[in-house]
Image (cartoon, rainbow, N blue to C red; front, side, top):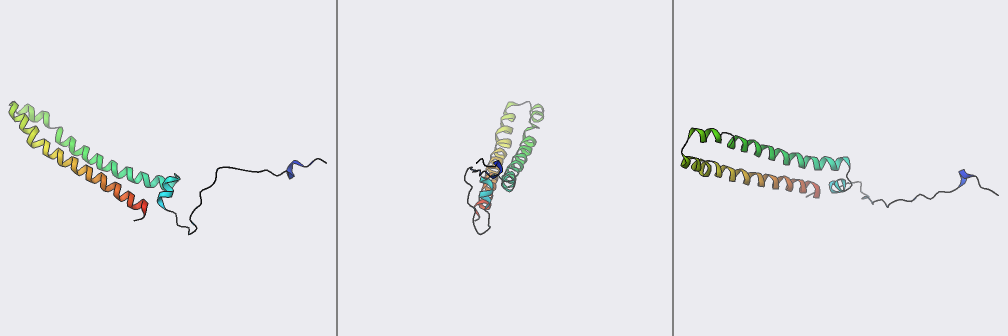
Length: 118
């Protein structure tokens, strides 16, 4: 007795699904791990804050370095060039680098605090 193809049972298998918390609360870390739209938004917010800090540093760096050829053309003395580089440019560059590192670390700590729910 032939069976009707519409009555045939089909077994569907696939990768196991992750069990979600029963409370309905969904952690941001899970959103990021599962690469959902919300998780993508969290990561993009970190990337944007890091990009803002980098662009601020780049802008200040350009403002510090761009006028150097004019300064060197105005002062033909080689000792003045070294003084400008060593005393007028190097300390602001060190301060700028320290500010950038602190800002980047603070952005990452804020992101971790958001993701870890602390």
